[in-house]
Image 1 (cartoon, helix red, strand yellow):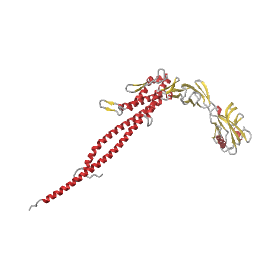
Image 2 (cartoon, rainbow, N blue to C red; image 1 turned 180 degrees about the vertical axis):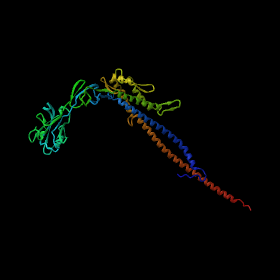
Image 3 (cartoon, rainbow, N blue to C red; image 1 turned 135 degrees about the vertical axis):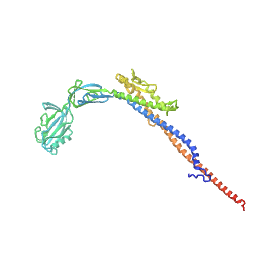
Image 4 (spheres, helix red, strand yellow; image 1 turned 90 degrees about the vertical axis):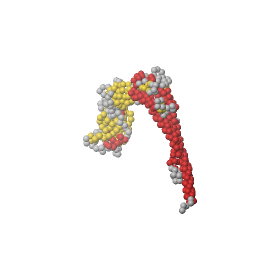
Length: 480
C-alpha cells in the first residue's frame, strides 16, 4: 500500500513501520538462512561422497572381473617380418618364428591387344578354382573345388567386356586391364592367396580351337593348353614355429597358436621372437587405481566427519549415521578373507594391500608381483568372481562392487535417498520463505493502517485545539 507519512503528528510512519516489521522478519529470516545453509552443505557433502564412492565402485568393478587378471601383451622382435595379436584365450609363451615364403595369389596375363575395344571372340569361358599339379610351369593336372561358366557373346566380347563379365561372375577372380606401353593386356588375379585358390580357365570357343591362340581360346589356361602367362603362382605360406614346419593358405594365420593371430609380412633370414606374455604392469596399475580411489574416499570421509576439539569445529557430516554406515560396511568387506580359497593367499593383506590405523590403504607393488607370479589363480580369486581349483569364489572386489552398487542405485540407494530428503527440506524452506513474506506484508499493512489512523486522530485533535484557542482569544476583553 502507499504509505502516508504523519501529516498530523509529524511522525516518520514509513521508518517506524519498517523498523517494526524488520524486528519480526530478521530473526525469522536468520533462522531460515541458517537452516538452508546447513541443509545445502549436507546435500553437497553427500553428493561429493556419492561421487567418490562411485569412483571407487568403478575401480572395484574392474577388479571384480577375472579377465582383468588375464590381460596380456604381445610383441614381435621384428615387426617388418611379422606382427602378432591375440584374444583373451591366447596361449601364453615365447615362440621362434622363421618364414620361408609368404602365401601368394596366382596372377595370369593374356597376350597383348592394341585397344580395349579389340574383340576376343565368343563362346563360354569356364573359370575353376582348385589345386594344380605342375609339370614345369604348366599344369599336369588340376583338382577343382568350384567353377563358374561365363557366356561371352557379341554384347561383351571386347577386352573391356570380358573383363567386366569376369568381375560380375563371382568366380573368385579379379580381372583388370594392364596398359603395357602402347598395348593392353588382361590381368587375372585370384581373390585369395594359397595354392588351393589357383585358377583353371577352360574355353568352349564358338570359332573352334579351344586352346589355340585365336578367338576366345586366347584365354585358355589348363592342363590341356595354356595361352595365358603365369606371372605369379598361387602358393601357401611356409614357415616354422619353434622348428615345427607349418603351411598356411593365408599370410594371416589364426589357427596355429590358440588365440593368436600371426600376420606374416616377409621371409626371414633367421628366426624372430614372438611373445604372448601376462601384462603384469597393466594389472598392477588397475590394482593401484583401486587403492587410490579408496584413499580418495577415505580422505573425503575424514574431512566431512572430523572434529577439532581445540576450536570446537566439526565437519559437516560429523556424527552422521549414514556416512559412518557406508564407511563401516566398506571397511568390513576390505578386511575379510575370501571363502573358498585355500593356501597362502586369501585376503588383500596377503597380496600386498594393507590399511593402517588412520584408514589409509597402502599397496606394495613388489609383493603383489611376487605373489601373482607364484599363484595367479589364487590372487585373481582374492579380488574377482572366478573359479579356483574347482571352487567358485567371490573375491573382495566382487563383494565390494555389489555392496557399493546398492549404495548408488538411483533414487533408492542410500545416497540418493538422503539427498532427496534434504532437497525436500530445501523445498519446505522455500515455502516457509513465501509464508514469511506474506505474513510480513500483512503485518506491514496492519501497522500502516493503525499508525495512519492515529495520525488522522492527532490531526483532528490539533485542528480542534487551534479552533478553541482562536475562540478563547476572541472572548478576551479588548483594551481601549
